[in-house]
Length: 174
Image (tube, rainbow, N blue to C red; front, top):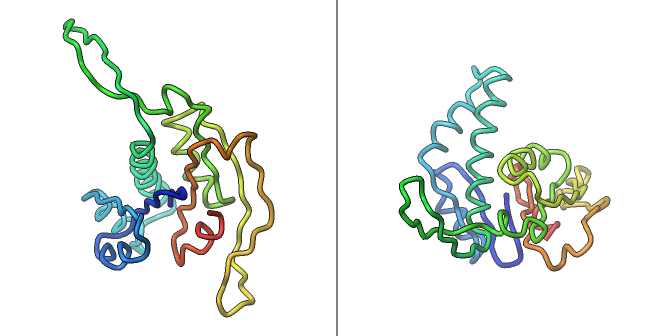
């Protein structure tokens, strides 16, 4: 799950998109045909642990790339090897990586953080420890501690929580 106060993006199996889009007006459901295959492999009882990690990382990489694509960009003209001009865009991850913070909800969020760091090695990192209260009927999120970089209030934040059951941890973090 990736979220900010303005936008929430989640990847969910395609059969749950109708339900997910009614959860929040700023919810963006990432649609990719790749998820059907990846979730089939991830959920298969016959999938061994090595393959589970492989397919999970592929899904998280797709999510990390899509989350990065939702960050601000600026126009950038470049010269191609054929001397043609290409008018593209650069992400804030390229132009001002200190303006972005990837906040991992420890422990599951750390696996998604690895994927974000692969595409943005210089991104600032924060950590939040949030767990469900298993003794409560509502299983509400319980916040234990937070470590964020200075100036995070002025940064674009990618909140990383690949564990999407109720969304309580991510909602509590926001």
